[in-house]
Image (cartoon, rainbow, N blue to C red; front, side, top):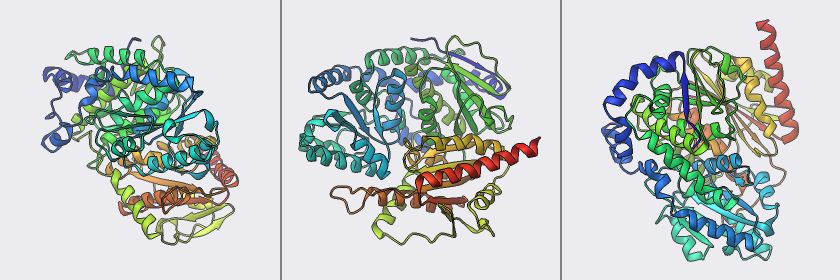
Length: 543
Protein backbone atom coordinates (compact mmCIF):
# COMPACT_ATOMS: atom_id res chain seq x y z
CA UNK A 1 0.00 0.00 0.00
CA UNK A 2 1.27 3.48 -0.80
CA UNK A 3 2.01 5.44 2.33
CA UNK A 4 -0.81 7.53 3.72
CA UNK A 5 0.19 10.93 5.01
CA UNK A 6 -1.62 13.92 6.45
CA UNK A 7 -0.60 17.45 7.35
CA UNK A 8 -2.71 20.41 8.47
CA UNK A 9 -2.41 24.07 9.37
CA UNK A 10 -4.62 26.77 10.87
CA UNK A 11 -8.27 25.93 11.45
CA UNK A 12 -7.78 22.28 10.43
CA UNK A 13 -4.99 21.80 12.95
CA UNK A 14 -7.04 23.54 15.63
CA UNK A 15 -9.97 21.24 14.91
CA UNK A 16 -7.66 18.27 15.27
CA UNK A 17 -6.40 19.47 18.63
CA UNK A 18 -9.94 20.21 19.81
CA UNK A 19 -11.63 16.95 18.82
CA UNK A 20 -9.01 14.21 18.45
CA UNK A 21 -8.47 13.44 22.17
CA UNK A 22 -12.17 12.80 22.71
CA UNK A 23 -12.49 10.76 19.51
CA UNK A 24 -9.63 8.53 20.65
CA UNK A 25 -10.87 8.28 24.23
CA UNK A 26 -14.40 7.38 23.12
CA UNK A 27 -13.01 4.70 20.76
CA UNK A 28 -14.81 6.18 17.76
CA UNK A 29 -12.61 4.42 15.19
CA UNK A 30 -13.11 0.90 16.51
CA UNK A 31 -16.78 1.57 17.18
CA UNK A 32 -17.31 2.60 13.56
CA UNK A 33 -15.63 -0.60 12.38
CA UNK A 34 -17.73 -2.54 14.88
CA UNK A 35 -20.79 -1.00 13.15
CA UNK A 36 -22.00 0.87 16.21
CA UNK A 37 -25.12 2.47 14.77
CA UNK A 38 -25.67 4.68 17.84
CA UNK A 39 -22.81 7.07 17.02
CA UNK A 40 -24.93 9.49 14.98
CA UNK A 41 -27.77 9.98 17.45
CA UNK A 42 -31.20 8.39 18.03
CA UNK A 43 -32.77 9.84 14.87
CA UNK A 44 -30.10 8.20 12.69
CA UNK A 45 -30.05 4.77 14.31
CA UNK A 46 -32.50 3.00 12.01
CA UNK A 47 -30.68 4.18 8.88
CA UNK A 48 -27.11 3.76 10.13
CA UNK A 49 -27.91 0.24 11.33
CA UNK A 50 -28.29 -0.83 7.69
CA UNK A 51 -25.63 1.40 6.10
CA UNK A 52 -22.32 0.44 7.73
CA UNK A 53 -21.34 -2.44 5.45
CA UNK A 54 -18.74 -0.20 3.77
CA UNK A 55 -16.34 -0.69 6.70
CA UNK A 56 -15.76 -4.30 5.62
CA UNK A 57 -16.43 -3.92 1.89
CA UNK A 58 -12.82 -4.60 0.89
CA UNK A 59 -12.96 -8.00 2.58
CA UNK A 60 -16.55 -8.92 1.73
CA UNK A 61 -15.94 -8.10 -1.94
CA UNK A 62 -12.93 -10.42 -2.36
CA UNK A 63 -15.03 -13.37 -3.68
CA UNK A 64 -16.28 -11.15 -6.52
CA UNK A 65 -12.83 -10.90 -8.10
CA UNK A 66 -12.76 -14.40 -9.56
CA UNK A 67 -16.19 -14.09 -11.20
CA UNK A 68 -15.43 -10.63 -12.62
CA UNK A 69 -12.11 -11.71 -14.13
CA UNK A 70 -13.60 -14.87 -15.61
CA UNK A 71 -16.35 -12.80 -17.25
CA UNK A 72 -13.79 -10.30 -18.54
CA UNK A 73 -11.75 -13.08 -20.15
CA UNK A 74 -14.86 -14.63 -21.70
CA UNK A 75 -15.97 -11.30 -23.18
CA UNK A 76 -12.54 -10.60 -24.61
CA UNK A 77 -12.49 -14.04 -26.19
CA UNK A 78 -15.70 -13.03 -27.96
CA UNK A 79 -14.16 -9.83 -29.26
CA UNK A 80 -15.70 -7.53 -26.66
CA UNK A 81 -13.07 -4.93 -25.83
CA UNK A 82 -15.20 -1.92 -24.88
CA UNK A 83 -17.13 -1.65 -21.63
CA UNK A 84 -19.79 1.04 -21.28
CA UNK A 85 -21.26 1.84 -17.87
CA UNK A 86 -24.85 2.99 -17.49
CA UNK A 87 -25.16 4.46 -14.02
CA UNK A 88 -25.60 7.59 -11.94
CA UNK A 89 -24.04 9.04 -8.79
CA UNK A 90 -22.13 6.50 -6.75
CA UNK A 91 -22.70 3.87 -9.42
CA UNK A 92 -20.68 5.84 -11.98
CA UNK A 93 -18.31 8.20 -10.18
CA UNK A 94 -16.25 5.54 -8.40
CA UNK A 95 -15.68 3.33 -11.48
CA UNK A 96 -14.77 6.42 -13.52
CA UNK A 97 -12.06 7.37 -11.01
CA UNK A 98 -10.80 3.80 -10.63
CA UNK A 99 -10.53 3.21 -14.38
CA UNK A 100 -9.13 6.66 -15.11
CA UNK A 101 -6.42 6.34 -12.49
CA UNK A 102 -5.49 2.88 -13.77
CA UNK A 103 -5.33 4.23 -17.32
CA UNK A 104 -7.90 1.84 -18.78
CA UNK A 105 -10.78 2.74 -21.07
CA UNK A 106 -14.29 2.83 -19.58
CA UNK A 107 -17.14 4.63 -21.31
CA UNK A 108 -19.27 6.21 -18.58
CA UNK A 109 -22.78 7.14 -19.66
CA UNK A 110 -24.20 9.12 -16.75
CA UNK A 111 -26.37 11.48 -18.74
CA UNK A 112 -29.80 11.74 -20.33
CA UNK A 113 -28.64 14.27 -22.91
CA UNK A 114 -29.72 12.96 -26.34
CA UNK A 115 -26.46 13.93 -28.05
CA UNK A 116 -24.27 12.29 -25.39
CA UNK A 117 -26.38 9.11 -25.38
CA UNK A 118 -26.30 8.95 -29.18
CA UNK A 119 -22.51 9.33 -29.18
CA UNK A 120 -22.16 6.42 -26.77
CA UNK A 121 -24.36 4.28 -29.01
CA UNK A 122 -22.34 5.14 -32.13
CA UNK A 123 -19.01 3.90 -30.79
CA UNK A 124 -17.91 0.32 -31.67
CA UNK A 125 -21.20 -1.38 -30.87
CA UNK A 126 -19.93 -4.74 -32.16
CA UNK A 127 -17.15 -4.65 -29.56
CA UNK A 128 -19.26 -3.35 -26.66
CA UNK A 129 -20.81 -4.81 -23.54
CA UNK A 130 -22.65 -2.64 -21.03
CA UNK A 131 -22.76 -2.69 -17.25
CA UNK A 132 -26.07 -1.39 -15.92
CA UNK A 133 -25.65 -0.28 -12.30
CA UNK A 134 -28.54 0.74 -10.07
CA UNK A 135 -28.77 0.09 -6.37
CA UNK A 136 -32.53 0.54 -6.18
CA UNK A 137 -33.11 -0.95 -9.60
CA UNK A 138 -35.56 1.81 -10.46
CA UNK A 139 -33.33 4.76 -11.41
CA UNK A 140 -35.01 6.37 -14.42
CA UNK A 141 -31.78 7.49 -16.10
CA UNK A 142 -30.18 4.04 -15.88
CA UNK A 143 -33.33 2.26 -16.99
CA UNK A 144 -33.57 4.56 -20.02
CA UNK A 145 -29.92 3.97 -20.93
CA UNK A 146 -30.37 0.19 -20.68
CA UNK A 147 -33.43 0.29 -22.93
CA UNK A 148 -31.75 2.27 -25.69
CA UNK A 149 -28.61 0.10 -25.62
CA UNK A 150 -30.66 -3.09 -25.70
CA UNK A 151 -32.50 -1.87 -28.79
CA UNK A 152 -29.24 -0.84 -30.44
CA UNK A 153 -27.73 -4.29 -29.85
CA UNK A 154 -30.77 -6.00 -31.32
CA UNK A 155 -30.90 -3.61 -34.28
CA UNK A 156 -27.26 -4.45 -35.00
CA UNK A 157 -28.01 -8.17 -35.03
CA UNK A 158 -26.27 -8.73 -31.69
CA UNK A 159 -27.83 -10.88 -28.97
CA UNK A 160 -28.51 -8.09 -26.46
CA UNK A 161 -28.83 -10.41 -23.46
CA UNK A 162 -25.27 -11.65 -24.00
CA UNK A 163 -23.91 -8.09 -23.79
CA UNK A 164 -25.74 -6.79 -20.71
CA UNK A 165 -24.28 -7.14 -17.20
CA UNK A 166 -26.26 -5.96 -14.20
CA UNK A 167 -25.13 -4.66 -10.80
CA UNK A 168 -27.89 -4.10 -8.27
CA UNK A 169 -29.04 -4.91 -4.76
CA UNK A 170 -30.44 -8.39 -4.18
CA UNK A 171 -34.19 -8.49 -4.59
CA UNK A 172 -34.45 -5.15 -6.39
CA UNK A 173 -36.85 -4.81 -9.35
CA UNK A 174 -33.83 -4.81 -11.67
CA UNK A 175 -32.43 -7.96 -10.05
CA UNK A 176 -35.61 -9.94 -10.67
CA UNK A 177 -36.27 -8.61 -14.17
CA UNK A 178 -32.67 -9.16 -15.30
CA UNK A 179 -32.61 -12.78 -14.23
CA UNK A 180 -35.90 -13.36 -16.01
CA UNK A 181 -34.52 -11.66 -19.15
CA UNK A 182 -31.48 -13.93 -19.15
CA UNK A 183 -28.87 -11.16 -19.15
CA UNK A 184 -25.22 -12.24 -19.32
CA UNK A 185 -24.55 -11.79 -15.61
CA UNK A 186 -26.16 -10.30 -12.53
CA UNK A 187 -23.91 -9.18 -9.68
CA UNK A 188 -25.48 -8.37 -6.33
CA UNK A 189 -23.89 -5.76 -4.10
CA UNK A 190 -24.10 -5.58 -0.32
CA UNK A 191 -27.47 -3.92 0.43
CA UNK A 192 -26.00 -2.55 3.67
CA UNK A 193 -23.81 -0.09 1.75
CA UNK A 194 -25.20 3.21 0.46
CA UNK A 195 -24.49 4.22 -3.11
CA UNK A 196 -21.92 6.91 -2.38
CA UNK A 197 -20.02 4.53 -0.06
CA UNK A 198 -20.05 1.70 -2.63
CA UNK A 199 -16.68 2.15 -4.37
CA UNK A 200 -15.31 -1.09 -2.91
CA UNK A 201 -18.41 -3.14 -3.66
CA UNK A 202 -19.67 -4.64 -6.91
CA UNK A 203 -20.68 -1.15 -8.05
CA UNK A 204 -17.06 -0.04 -8.21
CA UNK A 205 -15.46 -3.38 -9.02
CA UNK A 206 -17.55 -4.89 -11.81
CA UNK A 207 -17.19 -2.13 -14.44
CA UNK A 208 -13.61 -1.41 -13.42
CA UNK A 209 -12.58 -5.05 -13.46
CA UNK A 210 -14.26 -5.76 -16.78
CA UNK A 211 -12.50 -2.71 -18.24
CA UNK A 212 -9.11 -4.08 -17.18
CA UNK A 213 -8.28 -2.68 -13.73
CA UNK A 214 -6.29 -4.90 -11.34
CA UNK A 215 -9.13 -5.08 -8.84
CA UNK A 216 -7.36 -7.64 -6.65
CA UNK A 217 -4.55 -5.18 -5.92
CA UNK A 218 -7.16 -2.46 -5.45
CA UNK A 219 -9.00 -4.45 -2.77
CA UNK A 220 -5.76 -5.50 -1.08
CA UNK A 221 -4.74 -1.86 -0.69
CA UNK A 222 -8.15 -0.99 0.74
CA UNK A 223 -7.93 -3.84 3.26
CA UNK A 224 -4.59 -2.55 4.50
CA UNK A 225 -6.03 0.96 4.83
CA UNK A 226 -8.99 -0.39 6.82
CA UNK A 227 -6.57 -1.95 9.30
CA UNK A 228 -4.85 1.42 9.76
CA UNK A 229 -8.17 3.23 10.26
CA UNK A 230 -9.49 0.67 12.74
CA UNK A 231 -7.25 2.04 15.46
CA UNK A 232 -8.08 4.37 18.34
CA UNK A 233 -4.85 6.29 18.09
CA UNK A 234 -3.88 9.95 17.63
CA UNK A 235 -2.11 8.98 14.38
CA UNK A 236 -5.36 7.85 12.73
CA UNK A 237 -5.49 9.87 9.51
CA UNK A 238 -9.21 9.22 9.06
CA UNK A 239 -9.98 10.81 12.41
CA UNK A 240 -7.76 13.76 11.50
CA UNK A 241 -9.46 14.35 8.16
CA UNK A 242 -12.88 13.95 9.78
CA UNK A 243 -12.11 16.77 12.23
CA UNK A 244 -11.00 19.00 9.33
CA UNK A 245 -14.18 18.34 7.37
CA UNK A 246 -16.69 18.70 10.17
CA UNK A 247 -14.97 20.09 13.24
CA UNK A 248 -13.63 23.57 12.46
CA UNK A 249 -14.96 26.35 14.66
CA UNK A 250 -16.56 28.43 13.35
CA UNK A 251 -17.38 25.87 10.67
CA UNK A 252 -15.54 26.37 7.39
CA UNK A 253 -18.31 24.92 5.27
CA UNK A 254 -16.64 25.24 1.85
CA UNK A 255 -14.05 22.48 1.38
CA UNK A 256 -11.88 23.24 -1.65
CA UNK A 257 -10.45 19.92 -2.86
CA UNK A 258 -7.49 20.74 -5.09
CA UNK A 259 -5.74 18.12 -7.20
CA UNK A 260 -2.06 18.92 -6.67
CA UNK A 261 -0.07 16.04 -8.10
CA UNK A 262 -1.67 13.02 -6.42
CA UNK A 263 -1.81 11.03 -9.65
CA UNK A 264 -5.44 10.10 -8.95
CA UNK A 265 -7.67 11.04 -11.89
CA UNK A 266 -10.94 12.72 -10.90
CA UNK A 267 -10.80 11.92 -7.19
CA UNK A 268 -12.34 15.26 -6.18
CA UNK A 269 -15.44 14.54 -8.28
CA UNK A 270 -15.97 11.30 -6.36
CA UNK A 271 -15.30 12.95 -3.00
CA UNK A 272 -17.69 15.76 -3.93
CA UNK A 273 -20.66 13.40 -4.03
CA UNK A 274 -19.58 11.53 -0.91
CA UNK A 275 -19.29 14.66 1.22
CA UNK A 276 -22.09 16.83 -0.17
CA UNK A 277 -24.75 14.15 -0.15
CA UNK A 278 -23.66 12.84 3.25
CA UNK A 279 -23.45 16.15 5.13
CA UNK A 280 -25.81 18.60 3.40
CA UNK A 281 -28.96 18.35 5.51
CA UNK A 282 -30.83 19.93 8.41
CA UNK A 283 -29.58 23.33 7.24
CA UNK A 284 -25.93 22.46 7.79
CA UNK A 285 -23.13 20.55 6.08
CA UNK A 286 -19.93 21.17 4.15
CA UNK A 287 -19.82 21.86 0.42
CA UNK A 288 -16.92 20.35 -1.59
CA UNK A 289 -15.47 22.57 -4.30
CA UNK A 290 -13.57 20.74 -7.07
CA UNK A 291 -10.62 22.96 -7.97
CA UNK A 292 -7.04 23.10 -9.15
CA UNK A 293 -4.00 24.14 -7.10
CA UNK A 294 -4.12 27.66 -8.53
CA UNK A 295 -7.88 28.20 -8.51
CA UNK A 296 -9.09 31.48 -6.99
CA UNK A 297 -10.62 29.81 -3.92
CA UNK A 298 -7.27 28.27 -2.95
CA UNK A 299 -5.72 31.67 -2.33
CA UNK A 300 -8.83 33.62 -1.33
CA UNK A 301 -8.21 33.57 2.42
CA UNK A 302 -11.99 33.46 2.92
CA UNK A 303 -13.08 32.67 6.47
CA UNK A 304 -15.55 29.99 5.34
CA UNK A 305 -13.05 28.08 3.14
CA UNK A 306 -10.74 25.18 3.99
CA UNK A 307 -8.32 23.90 1.33
CA UNK A 308 -7.51 20.19 1.03
CA UNK A 309 -4.65 19.41 -1.35
CA UNK A 310 -4.40 15.94 -2.89
CA UNK A 311 -0.66 15.40 -3.20
CA UNK A 312 1.86 12.69 -4.09
CA UNK A 313 3.22 10.57 -1.26
CA UNK A 314 6.74 11.96 -1.59
CA UNK A 315 5.73 15.56 -2.30
CA UNK A 316 7.41 18.40 -0.46
CA UNK A 317 4.37 20.60 0.08
CA UNK A 318 4.46 24.02 1.68
CA UNK A 319 0.97 24.60 3.06
CA UNK A 320 -0.67 27.97 3.38
CA UNK A 321 -2.87 28.93 6.29
CA UNK A 322 -5.99 26.79 6.82
CA UNK A 323 -4.89 23.99 4.53
CA UNK A 324 -4.62 20.22 4.57
CA UNK A 325 -2.40 17.98 2.46
CA UNK A 326 -3.24 14.30 2.14
CA UNK A 327 -1.50 11.58 0.14
CA UNK A 328 -2.10 7.91 -0.53
CA UNK A 329 -3.14 5.40 -3.15
CA UNK A 330 -6.65 5.52 -4.60
CA UNK A 331 -8.16 2.58 -2.69
CA UNK A 332 -6.59 3.77 0.56
CA UNK A 333 -7.83 7.31 -0.01
CA UNK A 334 -11.35 6.06 -0.69
CA UNK A 335 -11.38 4.21 2.63
CA UNK A 336 -9.99 7.28 4.44
CA UNK A 337 -12.52 9.70 2.97
CA UNK A 338 -15.48 7.39 3.61
CA UNK A 339 -14.37 6.99 7.21
CA UNK A 340 -13.68 10.72 7.60
CA UNK A 341 -17.11 11.60 6.19
CA UNK A 342 -18.75 9.38 8.80
CA UNK A 343 -16.71 11.14 11.52
CA UNK A 344 -17.59 14.56 10.12
CA UNK A 345 -21.28 13.67 10.20
CA UNK A 346 -20.97 12.83 13.87
CA UNK A 347 -19.27 16.16 14.63
CA UNK A 348 -21.90 18.04 12.63
CA UNK A 349 -24.74 16.27 14.43
CA UNK A 350 -26.32 14.85 11.27
CA UNK A 351 -26.99 11.42 9.78
CA UNK A 352 -24.41 10.93 7.00
CA UNK A 353 -26.20 7.91 5.54
CA UNK A 354 -29.52 9.37 4.35
CA UNK A 355 -30.35 11.82 1.54
CA UNK A 356 -33.80 13.24 2.33
CA UNK A 357 -33.78 16.00 -0.27
CA UNK A 358 -32.57 14.05 -3.31
CA UNK A 359 -36.01 12.60 -3.91
CA UNK A 360 -37.67 16.02 -4.20
CA UNK A 361 -36.16 16.81 -7.61
CA UNK A 362 -36.99 13.30 -8.87
CA UNK A 363 -40.63 13.72 -7.86
CA UNK A 364 -40.84 17.15 -9.51
CA UNK A 365 -39.30 15.81 -12.73
CA UNK A 366 -41.69 12.87 -12.77
CA UNK A 367 -44.63 15.23 -12.31
CA UNK A 368 -43.48 17.39 -15.20
CA UNK A 369 -43.06 14.33 -17.43
CA UNK A 370 -46.55 13.13 -16.62
CA UNK A 371 -48.19 16.54 -17.02
CA UNK A 372 -46.05 17.70 -19.98
CA UNK A 373 -46.79 21.38 -19.40
CA UNK A 374 -45.80 24.11 -21.82
CA UNK A 375 -42.31 25.51 -21.09
CA UNK A 376 -42.22 28.63 -18.94
CA UNK A 377 -41.99 31.58 -21.32
CA UNK A 378 -38.59 33.23 -21.48
CA UNK A 379 -38.25 36.65 -19.88
CA UNK A 380 -36.35 37.61 -23.03
CA UNK A 381 -34.02 36.21 -25.68
CA UNK A 382 -30.48 37.47 -26.25
CA UNK A 383 -28.66 35.97 -29.21
CA UNK A 384 -28.55 32.19 -28.69
CA UNK A 385 -29.72 32.40 -25.07
CA UNK A 386 -33.26 32.32 -23.69
CA UNK A 387 -33.33 33.86 -20.20
CA UNK A 388 -35.63 32.87 -17.33
CA UNK A 389 -35.40 34.05 -13.73
CA UNK A 390 -37.15 35.47 -10.70
CA UNK A 391 -38.08 38.95 -9.53
CA UNK A 392 -34.42 39.63 -8.75
CA UNK A 393 -33.85 39.92 -12.55
CA UNK A 394 -35.15 43.47 -12.29
CA UNK A 395 -34.77 45.37 -15.54
CA UNK A 396 -32.18 43.05 -17.10
CA UNK A 397 -32.58 42.88 -20.87
CA UNK A 398 -29.44 40.98 -21.90
CA UNK A 399 -27.97 37.65 -20.81
CA UNK A 400 -24.96 39.50 -19.40
CA UNK A 401 -27.20 41.75 -17.30
CA UNK A 402 -29.15 38.71 -16.10
CA UNK A 403 -25.95 36.99 -14.97
CA UNK A 404 -24.86 40.18 -13.18
CA UNK A 405 -28.26 40.41 -11.48
CA UNK A 406 -27.89 36.83 -10.24
CA UNK A 407 -24.42 37.50 -8.90
CA UNK A 408 -25.77 40.53 -7.05
CA UNK A 409 -27.77 38.12 -4.88
CA UNK A 410 -24.54 36.59 -3.52
CA UNK A 411 -23.87 37.25 0.15
CA UNK A 412 -20.51 37.15 1.96
CA UNK A 413 -21.18 33.50 2.93
CA UNK A 414 -22.73 32.38 -0.37
CA UNK A 415 -21.55 30.03 -3.07
CA UNK A 416 -22.43 29.95 -6.77
CA UNK A 417 -23.54 26.66 -8.31
CA UNK A 418 -23.28 26.28 -12.09
CA UNK A 419 -25.35 23.43 -13.51
CA UNK A 420 -25.01 22.44 -17.16
CA UNK A 421 -27.64 20.03 -18.47
CA UNK A 422 -26.09 18.82 -21.71
CA UNK A 423 -23.22 16.85 -23.22
CA UNK A 424 -20.31 16.95 -20.76
CA UNK A 425 -17.92 15.26 -23.18
CA UNK A 426 -18.47 17.36 -26.29
CA UNK A 427 -18.53 20.63 -24.33
CA UNK A 428 -16.05 19.87 -21.56
CA UNK A 429 -14.42 23.27 -22.10
CA UNK A 430 -17.44 24.93 -20.50
CA UNK A 431 -16.08 23.86 -17.11
CA UNK A 432 -13.46 26.56 -17.58
CA UNK A 433 -16.02 29.21 -16.62
CA UNK A 434 -15.85 27.93 -13.03
CA UNK A 435 -12.52 29.57 -12.27
CA UNK A 436 -13.56 32.74 -14.09
CA UNK A 437 -16.75 33.03 -12.05
CA UNK A 438 -14.76 32.44 -8.85
CA UNK A 439 -12.34 35.20 -9.83
CA UNK A 440 -15.16 37.58 -10.75
CA UNK A 441 -17.23 37.01 -7.61
CA UNK A 442 -14.64 36.30 -4.95
CA UNK A 443 -16.85 33.44 -3.76
CA UNK A 444 -16.53 29.64 -4.07
CA UNK A 445 -18.07 28.18 -7.23
CA UNK A 446 -19.15 24.63 -8.01
CA UNK A 447 -19.71 23.22 -11.48
CA UNK A 448 -21.97 20.23 -12.04
CA UNK A 449 -23.12 18.39 -15.14
CA UNK A 450 -26.82 17.58 -15.07
CA UNK A 451 -28.47 15.36 -14.31
CA UNK A 452 -25.61 13.52 -12.61
CA UNK A 453 -25.03 16.20 -9.95
CA UNK A 454 -28.62 15.66 -8.75
CA UNK A 455 -27.30 12.43 -7.21
CA UNK A 456 -24.51 14.27 -5.37
CA UNK A 457 -24.42 18.00 -4.61
CA UNK A 458 -28.17 18.19 -5.27
CA UNK A 459 -28.72 17.09 -1.66
CA UNK A 460 -26.59 19.93 -0.27
CA UNK A 461 -28.28 22.52 -2.52
CA UNK A 462 -31.63 21.89 -0.85
CA UNK A 463 -30.83 20.35 2.52
CA UNK A 464 -27.73 22.36 3.41
CA UNK A 465 -27.55 25.99 4.52
CA UNK A 466 -29.64 28.41 2.43
CA UNK A 467 -26.64 30.20 0.94
CA UNK A 468 -26.60 28.90 -2.63
CA UNK A 469 -27.12 30.93 -5.81
CA UNK A 470 -27.81 28.89 -8.94
CA UNK A 471 -27.01 29.28 -12.63
CA UNK A 472 -28.70 26.57 -14.69
CA UNK A 473 -27.66 26.11 -18.32
CA UNK A 474 -29.75 23.91 -20.60
CA UNK A 475 -29.38 23.40 -24.34
CA UNK A 476 -31.38 22.35 -27.35
CA UNK A 477 -30.22 19.06 -28.86
CA UNK A 478 -29.50 18.60 -32.54
CA UNK A 479 -31.92 15.67 -32.62
CA UNK A 480 -34.03 14.04 -29.91
CA UNK A 481 -33.78 10.34 -29.09
CA UNK A 482 -36.66 8.02 -28.23
CA UNK A 483 -36.59 5.75 -25.18
CA UNK A 484 -37.98 2.33 -26.10
CA UNK A 485 -41.33 1.54 -24.49
CA UNK A 486 -41.45 4.85 -22.65
CA UNK A 487 -43.86 7.73 -23.34
CA UNK A 488 -41.08 10.32 -23.18
CA UNK A 489 -37.82 10.94 -25.01
CA UNK A 490 -34.35 11.63 -23.69
CA UNK A 491 -34.81 15.29 -24.58
CA UNK A 492 -38.05 15.46 -22.64
CA UNK A 493 -36.48 13.62 -19.70
CA UNK A 494 -33.47 15.91 -19.31
CA UNK A 495 -35.69 18.97 -19.77
CA UNK A 496 -38.00 17.76 -17.01
CA UNK A 497 -35.05 17.01 -14.73
CA UNK A 498 -33.69 20.53 -15.16
CA UNK A 499 -37.09 22.18 -14.73
CA UNK A 500 -37.94 19.98 -11.76
CA UNK A 501 -34.73 20.82 -9.94
CA UNK A 502 -35.16 24.55 -10.63
CA UNK A 503 -38.71 24.31 -9.30
CA UNK A 504 -37.60 22.68 -6.04
CA UNK A 505 -34.74 25.14 -5.58
CA UNK A 506 -37.10 28.08 -6.05
CA UNK A 507 -39.55 26.53 -3.59
CA UNK A 508 -36.67 26.51 -1.10
CA UNK A 509 -36.15 30.22 -1.72
CA UNK A 510 -32.93 29.82 -3.74
CA UNK A 511 -32.34 32.27 -6.63
CA UNK A 512 -32.13 30.40 -9.95
CA UNK A 513 -31.17 31.90 -13.32
CA UNK A 514 -32.04 29.60 -16.24
CA UNK A 515 -30.19 30.08 -19.49
CA UNK A 516 -31.36 27.92 -22.38
CA UNK A 517 -28.99 27.73 -25.33
CA UNK A 518 -30.97 27.50 -28.56
CA UNK A 519 -27.75 26.62 -30.36
CA UNK A 520 -25.18 24.73 -28.34
CA UNK A 521 -21.92 25.90 -29.87
CA UNK A 522 -23.02 29.51 -30.31
CA UNK A 523 -24.63 29.61 -26.87
CA UNK A 524 -21.54 28.22 -25.13
CA UNK A 525 -19.36 30.78 -26.90
CA UNK A 526 -21.74 33.59 -25.91
CA UNK A 527 -21.75 32.46 -22.27
CA UNK A 528 -17.96 32.19 -22.22
CA UNK A 529 -17.71 35.75 -23.55
CA UNK A 530 -20.05 36.99 -20.80
CA UNK A 531 -18.01 35.32 -18.07
CA UNK A 532 -14.68 36.51 -19.51
CA UNK A 533 -15.98 40.08 -19.51
CA UNK A 534 -17.08 39.74 -15.87
CA UNK A 535 -13.68 38.35 -14.89
CA UNK A 536 -11.85 41.12 -16.75
CA UNK A 537 -13.92 43.81 -15.02
CA UNK A 538 -13.22 42.24 -11.64
CA UNK A 539 -9.48 42.17 -12.36
CA UNK A 540 -9.52 45.80 -13.48
CA UNK A 541 -11.35 46.82 -10.31
CA UNK A 542 -8.81 45.02 -8.11
CA UNK A 543 -5.86 46.65 -9.88
